[in-house]
Image 1 (cartoon, rainbow, N blue to C red):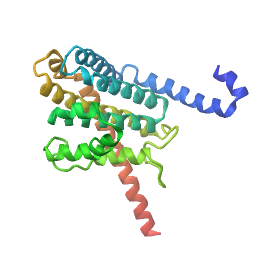
Image 2: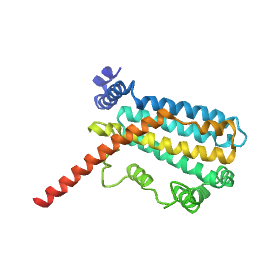
Image 3: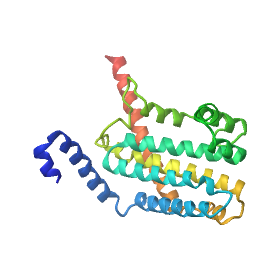
Image 4: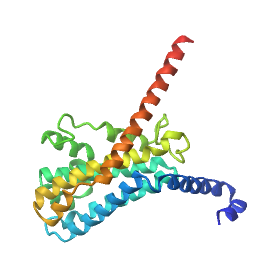
Length: 256
């Protein structure tokens, strides 16, 4: 079908063929590796949590947030293997907001009803990402115990919004053709999977301690942990090379 499309709609076909080829190459290289193994464990765990939340009277109101996070991870996986890393970055920004909301609910369960019944003005004023982070900071809740600022969230927002500079990793459009960058989506996925896992454990322990959902949330995800460790190593190598390249360019500019 794509070959037929190329004869009729060449510009559209070129974009679709590019992502299709990238998906095939990337999937083949990852087929038996730790990343796909960790992703499958993560998605199965989130599916189990959705069912456990739905079955618990204290947690059922929040089950859709867990389901939404699973959808975000699915989106990020598809975007990563097909070469659209900015889409993966946007999905992980959504997961970060879910993480922070769950932490906010763990600190003050009364905020659940406030949020679920809030109008748009209340959501903007009381439940905007900066407002939630400020409350988490005031409560000394990790990872905001030191500061309410989030460089990670700022980086995701910078990649999302229109600006004069191209993002160094998650540029818009097809952006997985620059070597190491093709793995960047997985750096994001597994880092935010670990953080979301912690937030879910916090909220289940607060609202339904020792329940089936709480015991499930406390389960260690060994494959996710292994994939996180491997992607962290790759990220460290990439960032070291990127830093060295920038320093070399700056030095070259000084010498010229």
